Length: 467
Image 1: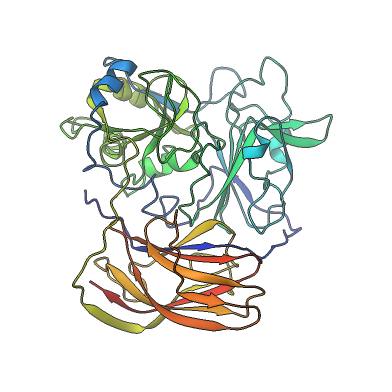
Image 2: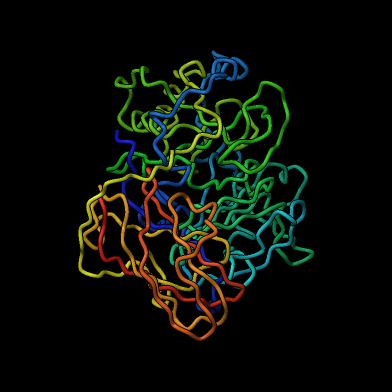
């Protein structure tokens, strides 16, 4: 498979988001329901979605595999109903509409590293009321109000996708406290699905590694869908030692163990042709996108969704046929290189809009962008821009901003913006400027704004491309 992403993207990092009031209308809530497209979740150059088939092997790979145990077999950590009702295998996720009411969550462990709400929106998480008393909305299967010591232990992740606003909410050890009449959780993290924004160094998330959980789960719909799996898979090991990119949090210091965020790759020489088609699809993803160490747990346990359609009679023997020795550890902290090509030819296109935050929400619409979070827009097959483009010519316009700020362009994944700006703006004045946005080798570029005020609206039009 090609190492290029499925599409070229422009990432946008903004300093503010106008507050949006939640609608009082009831929302449609679906367990394992529809996810916002395009899939996979997050941009193609996000760490979950980059092709690692050509990434270098870490010089300490053999020692890491020996620490796990070369004969350690893989295990599918997902499935359907467990033996005791309402216990389940795997993680359910919840799909809600943009009108789902937000409810506050009280933090019980990592409040200083948790997100109270999505930037620019009211505080809270769109937790459906059903999760209070009904089973199988939370990992483990027990409803939120079960706090009996016999049942309260476990990670109890709750994963919620706002499919209209393209926001992912994740909670760790979520409970409904009946006596206090409130939702409680050890920690929580919120992600824009149009972003490559990474959590601050040393911060946890709903996951020990500080990563999002849902994008790394094996889902039934993708395994039996028409397309290949295009993302890395989440897995656990019994012990870890510090963390490396893309992780942001450590949860162990065992000498010789893998760090959080480390990637394993199924060796290219491993023959997978004899497996069932759905198993081949999963194992091919392990070759192309790999496994990411996301938590401490059992060695080589691969996580997926709760779904009664999984056939463990097929999954279990297939996974057990692979051992840790079939994998190699790629270079710790690896990320695709960013390079600026030279001697490019320019091709014009009819002016075409890539972003307008004044319009309705969605892939190419608003609202105003949140502070400190990148926004990534699809460019390939849009506005006549081909997949071979290495840069785009754009016009950026800020409309009557309420405060001072600036706009900056640069290639990469949006983690660091340069000191130089392309467009400076001041209160109440509409201002525009032209710029060339170079794309990284992974196909992304970043547009950043800095402002101390909320409600800065931005329009980006493309006028041509370089290749």
